[in-house]
Image 1: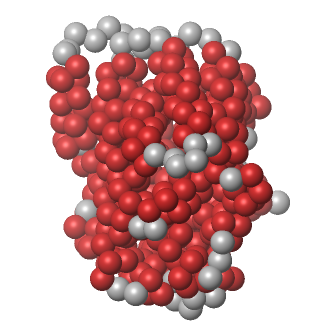
Image 2: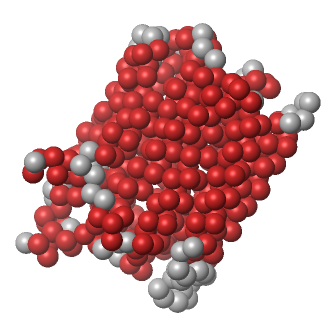
Image 3: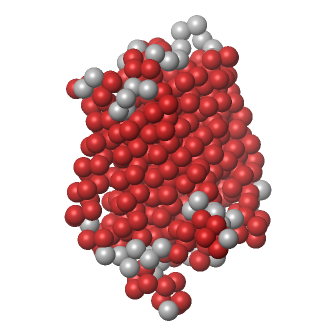
Length: 419
């Protein structure tokens, strides 16, 4: 029973925190809607253009604008009420999704509209994600940061698991326009939930210029070898998220499948991620967190290798689920480690750096995936992409001594108190 208690996700932040419950529900609904977009946008772009390069380009535009907006979000989160910042950002995104639906209803949907909405969505998403990360530590006790991180990861995993699967069915029945309408509606519900939170102003006055705030955030990440090392590991982990770019062509050319199967392929990593989150109770008491991160990154990359190894749907689903399992647990441990080693006065700026490395890694990963697809047959592209991830992770393990030797009993403030 004791072992089971250590494995099962810690839900105490939900039981004891009313504000955290609002945040949890808002995230679940929002990410459910975004799950529809994960399928709808690539399917529509591929259907209009027949080009994987365009699918990757839209993903890259989204990533670049999100990357830039994370720094704006960090500055705004340190100066204005964070509840207002998040609500305005999500409300804007909902309007953009409605525009996507209107465009999809046209006899000839315009590709430039999809690119334009990717820009708007990237800006809104970058701002809201950064403000959200800055808020989370203020809603839960310090010793429950890993539990809160696991629960927030679970919201993403549940949304990614259910959203794409339903999205594939919705698209097969009602077209991409239906998926876009549902995404807009879900975002409207999320915005309402955020407005139900209490005011969340920053804790102190900021006397730096916006540019100086961004620079000082990066400066802290560079000076702190633990936080900096974890952020670098996070960037590498996000390089593996480019697999999503390969899915439409992989399903078409290798599996001979349509939208419903594409939805399952996008859902499989989320299934593994949910399993990882649900068995994450042990992440709150890790001693060698850096080594755990590296091992989990290896599992994530190996899952992609397995997914593309045989060209069989069942094997691909299992491999993608393994990828999601390792990636989710790695993200939970990295989140907790960064929060534990970041002083309160840097939380907003480090949240911006965190979001920036996530979006930059995802964008670069999408470009790498497209490049792999351009030079190797699609039947091998997914496996080759995963192999590249294994190599980069191995290099990371050699180079980042700060992760290999990180002992939370020596460095963690909580560990020092407990000792």
